[in-house]
Image 1 (cartoon, one colour):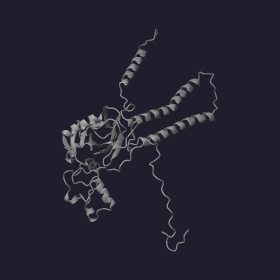
Image 2 (cartoon, rainbow, N blue to C red):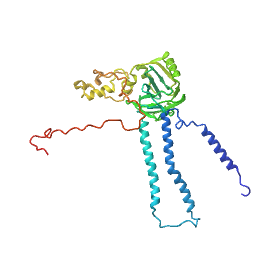
Image 3 (cartoon, rainbow, N blue to C red):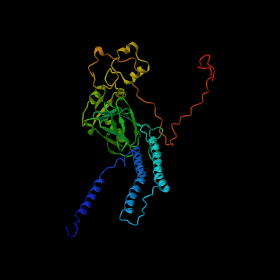
Image 4 (tube, rainbow, N blue to C red):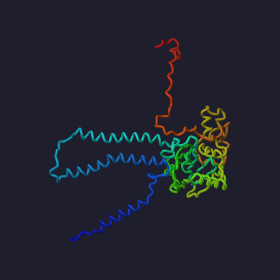
Length: 391
């Protein structure tokens, strides 16, 4: 074909690039532009790590193009040394630069891993805004159900399904568990993700620094309804949060054990539900796998095992403490398959963990444990067999 080349392909490429940029401009980069201080620190860590790695990647890519062009076969002026095999200066540059970057990445990651530990109480709500000693974090107990999320507010005495509301600039302390399979609790605008597992409790601390409507979801595949396992996460002012809690408490049903057993049945696209009252210690019963009436709690079984068993009574404890979920639920134990129901069990603790130490903005120097004291050695005669000379 002869004549003037067509400009249509170039115009099409320009239009395509413009449409791509326009579509990207509408994307919400919530991970890099979140609404919470913890998530923002995590986003900054991603940016810094990426920039440090690009310090090696970009020069390598540029030099690859340069050397391919500089030493192409058509360039007769390029230096030709087929027997060249070593350069000390070049080796120093090749190995020293990546090593320095790895050291920087390791130091940054070590500090961030401890400062952003999900179990670590918040020391600040924003840069330059330390948490006051008298500030109590908002405790929210989270249960991952099939396929929905349950939020219990023990301080307010309410609960919600697929709706999480928190006041702005107040630290939030999550206690997280699950009813069946493992899930992953994640609100990108608030903090990083953490797993929710049956029979276990994980923790997460975060804070909202601006009001708005966000989304939370499960980041771990958990079955047929996983893709719709999302919930609304709203950050509101302290006054709006108090009004929301009061409105929830004013009307609605009570979340007791029987209501919970119905709620945990698998369902998809569950609408937002609110409960005006919650049975005390329900979350701890969920963690200890003993929501069912008459079922021995996990902490009781562990106490029995730690004490050495039940003696003769333990011979009838043939039903192992396993997460059977629906096995024998509501049917009662058969006479030939009895199990110990209660033996002076300890009540479920309102707090299943030790008190948390307040957050600190001081540089990381360990946990502040004192060095072990030197203990004088015992005399040589102690524990030495009779007649054996001291060495």
